Image 1 (spheres, rainbow, N blue to C red):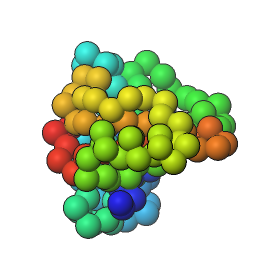
Image 2 (cartoon, helix red, strand yellow):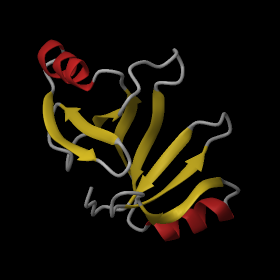
Image 3 (cartoon, rainbow, N blue to C red):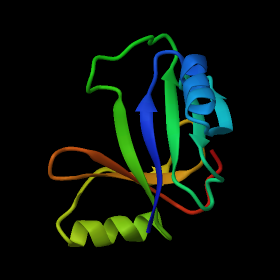
Length: 130
């Protein structure tokens, strides 16, 4: 396994991208709109996603702010096989909160696990279409 990205919900995507790229020196790696889901994802980081952990900025259309504490999203881990990883996690007593399958409004195979404190961890297959 490896750490893929940390997701943050943002109220002004352009302002956030400017901060991470211009203030912190990251690069905008990719950005994609999901009209059916009414959100945009932008990934920023210090290197390519194949070799580095990055930050996923999620902009939910029509939402311009979040209360402190609700902006945090999840940690993502790459696993060789999402379905098998869920079986293994469940067998070790882990709680699967989103069964493995394609991303809503996309094609990536993913699942979510919840840690003892309720924090979400996303499991993603190595090949991601979105």
